[in-house]
Image 1 (cartoon, rainbow, N blue to C red):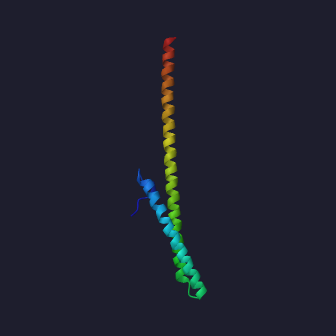
Image 2 (tube, one colour; image 1 turned 90 degrees about the vertical axis):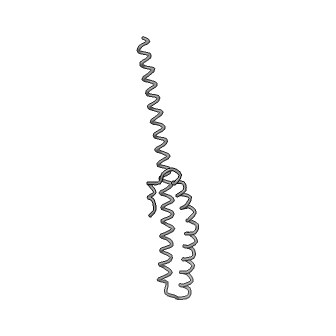
Image 3 (cartoon, rainbow, N blue to C red; image 1 turned 135 degrees about the horizontal axis):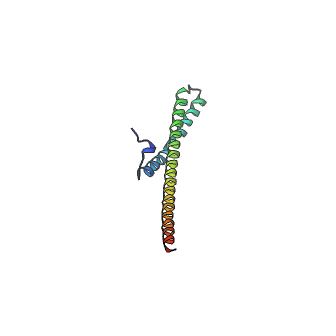
Length: 110
């Protein structure tokens, strides 16, 4: 059983992306081979049911890999945005605390 993309943590995220990207060229070759086999069967006048099923299966696998790559890239982007928002919030909190500290000091100096 594979781990859902949203549950990937740390180094597993880029590793999953790399693995999916490495599987894509092979999937593209399988699609091309299935398309060629279908074309040959059509030219020879053979029954193309099996060849069409093979092509559809290869196309589904290719789409699944593309979807997985897009999902992982979206996950990376979301996590990067979350880090940026967290950093901005921390900066705002620190700035607010310093501002309040300065205001407190200024009130006592009057």
